[in-house]
Length: 127
View 1 (cartoon, one colour):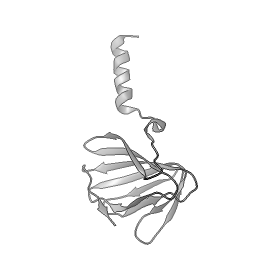
View 2: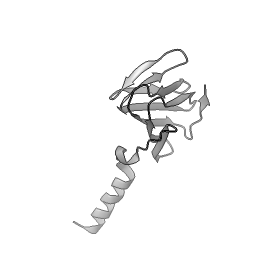
View 3: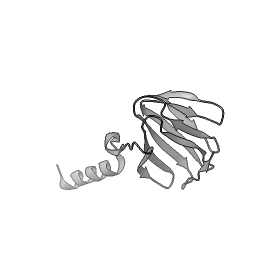
């Protein structure tokens, strides 16, 4: 195989192919948000929560925030009054100005991939 083809393929993989098990990092002291890419329109991060850890209730005025649960079970807070059980394979969406947050309510690790799309950098209003 041509050396230029090999180098091009390698650079494509480094820039556009991600392995969650190499990105994910857990910390027993605090939930972890592990960024793995950012452009001027989107950002991606792997959230890693130990039992009882949570992502505080918040909203963004300028982005959609999409969370894809890939491991464990938790509680999603779509507003200040409601709770929804989330587990592996489920996807949740918070549009601009919609409150959202997540808590690991299970007995094992909880992991989800988050994507924010819109006008970056995103703002955060905490509740």
